[in-house]
Length: 153
Image (cartoon, one colour):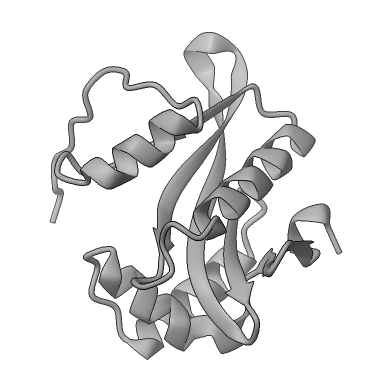
């Protein structure tokens, strides 16, 4: 079991690797982030990612309830000669924001990234998510550049 898979209690919150049994909660949380996902799709994604060494999905659990989910991806940052940890999804359940759950989850992600040898963290956040921007800036993240994308399908 790797360090990223171990449950890490942080006050009233436990941060642990997501399990297939969390698919329902993960689907709900992704929906709150704006990505409608059904149980079968969430389960498929959890199963696929669990086989990847470059990806991790973590959940925050408050008592018996899953209250947050985050996915991270490790990649070479070729032009800088560094290893990067990118947060590809991060959401705290409605009604649980502002209680330190996101802070605990982000701190655990950064710890895992350091353990993996990453020199940099990166994430994207939709333009209209001002509360999220304030949260990330309060944790030392800086706005940089633009994100461009092009759908291929």
